[in-house]
Image (cartoon, rainbow, N blue to C red; front, side):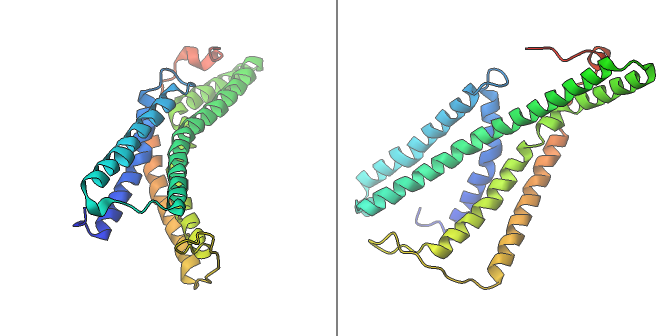
Length: 237
């Protein structure tokens, strides 16, 4: 591993985190028994935990037992802050998983509320022409269900990868830990390049990821409206 240059690790990290969100969303969806349940998300967390255990426990223990240069100095500060970093990484991974579910559930709730309002308005309408227009509007609305359900989910990856570098930069400006002294703070006044760069990188990252997610949402299969769907109330659970 020492033969890999620093930029090689940067590329690998970018590939790993860049593919994490869409892969974990698909995996959790495949493991879900029915919409509205969390079993699939919990199972995907379990899979992530298994991968973390192999990559973060088994492999380091094997390397530390085999190589002299792989043995650490077990300092308290190092153990505490490395553990905190692990917690932060795990919380981030779990939040990504549940953000996807919450986004879809939120969009589904709004869709069903709007759908029910259209149905009620259509049922109470006496004028045939107006009733027919509302039926057409309801059918068109239902045909866009797949795109509607993805309306919040497509924001997850852009927001995460725009927010993370901003927080990282701010923390690095005020927190300057030293050996044996983790609580060493100060503020380094940056030049104007930093805030401008943060805004440009965040905006660029958001737009790139959003355009990709939006394109996928537009390709989502749409349910075909039927005559029955256009004039009847949604089935009750």
